[in-house]
Length: 267
Image (cartoon, rainbow, N blue to C red; front, side):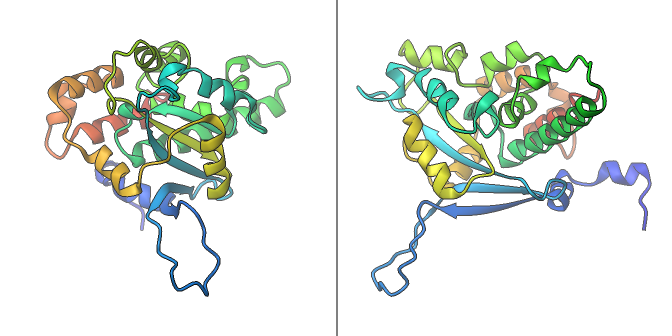
C-alpha cells in the first residue's frame, strides 16, 4: 500500500533506518578453541554497519580515547594520519579514516553519512564512466572513508569539515591535543574501516598506534551522555541547526542533526 507524501514525512527516522541499515557488534578477538572450558565471552568492541542499498558493503566502527603519555598520539597527533596514508589499499582514504567522535551524535549519524557517501560516490562514478571530460576532480581525490567524514558534517565546505570533524595535522582537535589544552578524556576518535574483517580492523588499530577500542557499551554511553549547554550550542553551530528545530514537538538535537546530515546536499 502506497503512502502519500505527508505520511512518509511523518515516519520516524528510526523506522526508515531499519529498512536500509542494520547493526551488529563484533568481538575483540575470535576464539575458535571450543574445547577449552576456560574460554570466556569477550565484550564486543566493534560496531558493524551493513546497508540495504549497498549489500556488498559493510562499515566497522570503533571508539578510541586519546590519553596523554610519553608514547601517546598527544606527542605527535598527525602521525596516525601519516600511518593511515601508508596502509595498503587506503589510497585517498578509500577504506579507512578517522573522525572526531565529539562531533558524532550516534551510530545512526555515522550510518546515514556512510549511506550518503556511497550514494554520492556511485553517482559520480557513473558520471565519470559516461562523461570522460567532467568536473568531478574534488570527488575523485577522496576515497569512500574520507567521503563519509565529509557527509557526516553539517557544512558542505570541505576545508571547514577537515578542520572541525577530521583528525589530521591541521584539525582543531589535533592541534589542541598537541598543545596540551585538552584533558585526558576530553578527546575521542572514531576509526572507520570499510570492507574488512574484525581482525583486520584490530590490526589497523595496532598499525597506526591507536589505543585499544572502548567496549560497545561504553561507546553507546558516550553517544547517550548528557551534553552540557556549551557543547549543545557548539554542535548546533557546526551543524547549522536552530533552537526551533531542536526544541519543537517530537524533535531533539539528534533528530535535528540527522535531518541536516541527510539533506544538506539536497537543499
